Image (tube, rainbow, N blue to C red; front, side):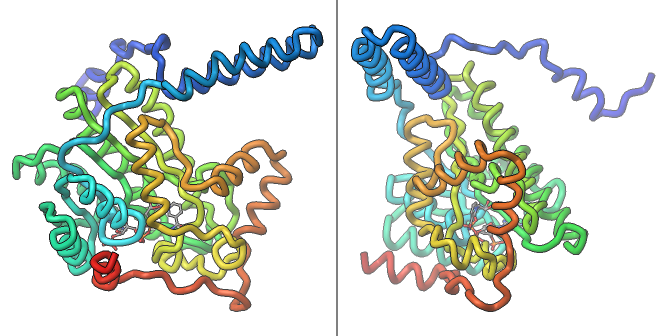
Length: 359
Ligand SMILES: NC(=O)c1ccc[n+]([C@@H]2O[C@H](COP(=O)([O-])OP(=O)(O)OC[C@H]3O[C@@H](n4cnc5c(N)ncnc54)[C@H](OP(=O)(O)O)[C@@H]3O)[C@@H](O)[C@H]2O)c1
């Protein structure tokens, strides 16, 4: 039977060669050991009350050294490519990486804002930045971006998948095209860029990938349904990838879970009047969010939250009964209809440049 090229690809790459590795002292196993040890200590203090303090001490003696001396991954090195570098969290990550000494490839659609980020980086940090304006919500553009960087001889050691698009409103009312673009950008392009650059990283034995996910990946969200569904996808994809990459200790995959962040993402998604963005008091500074992501990457974490608040929200939504979860999620996304509005975020990277130079 005649097979299409894509079918052949699937058959060829279908991995009998996936060799899961379990005996690795990584972030995942350290969490697992910590949970099992703490659980055993609790059970033994309950079953043998006389051993109370001893079991807690033994648990602490196992858990603390593991967590303190956990084999940290190496600090990222080499050229960084950041999608979504023209504003918000992606721009802030670009500044952090430039400050740490990396040359950069800045990717987004808005050439003027990309140029402003480039200028800020060159003036303040004296690092080289190359800009590429491309719309990653168009099918095939992830590969086009990869081919362009390869043809220019750029070796990407750090990949930040930061470009993202949201959309508040009822699912059935959302423009068809917006839902399509959101899914391609937030999911398909992110996976394809990870595959393309990730494979090269494996070949070189080193690389760092930061996926910008969202606390929305822990929430089922009436009122932001499609966007949060895309972030569930990113969360699942990234966690499983971290297991697959166990066989390649030089390659780190970390996902950053920001809570609501004060960027133009919110205004673009028309979510600035929702309770979560306007009145919950949970709004975060994109600089702090970017810094949490960079630290997570340096420590080889599979997942890092932007703040305690973001982590607590995710935990609460994860543990809550579904009826409670759904009710809270719909209240968080409910529109306040002009009563309160999020303060306008900083969108212009030229203005951010004067702050940077002043600091
Ligand atoms: N802000 C929040 O509350 C929040 C919370 C959780 C997670 N996040 C996630 O954080 C990431 C960054 O968002 P942000 O808050 O920093 O918002 P932002 O300031 O709007 O940044 C989004 C970036 O994505 C780029 N982008 C959008 N559509 C694109 C396309 N079709 N092709 C290429 N690039 C595109 C934008 O570039 P151009 O403008 O040049 O197109 C911009 O640089 C997103 O993945 C978002 O889902 C945000």
